[in-house]
Length: 149
Image 1: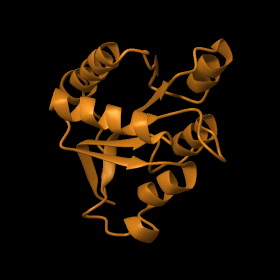
Image 2 (image 1 turned 45 degrees about the vertical axis):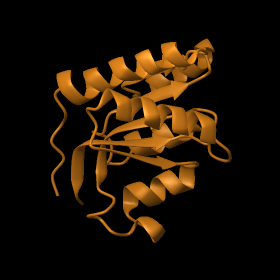
Image 3 (image 1 turned 90 degrees about the vertical axis):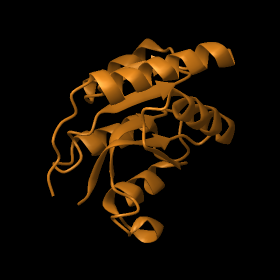
Image 4 (image 1 turned 135 degrees about the vertical axis):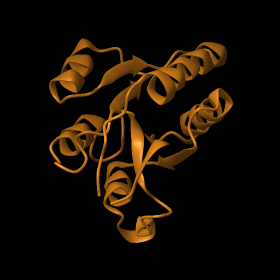
């Protein structure tokens, strides 16, 4: 298992949101890489180095996971549950980044050990600023856990 603390895995099924998020992270400039997957099974393939993500050097464990709740098939809460229930993955910080402001979604996210819950602002500038702050906090200020091979 290889770990890259300055990389981000974005789990987002909406291509436009994925691209905006990736662009905002790149503009913030603190993450070395951003990989995007569009559904739960692809996220688990990435995290387990299966299928097209089998190369551990090319697809190391990320230092941060940004997770949308509204995914096709298995929703983000179930993905969060599985990540936080896995002894090898549970220390990776997971931020729920979604459009949902429903109290039940917020409560369920924290109930399953989300490290943070952020809603996506509507305007691009506000969204970009939120991502810049997120990037700065999690990539620079936060002390990441050590995840050993």
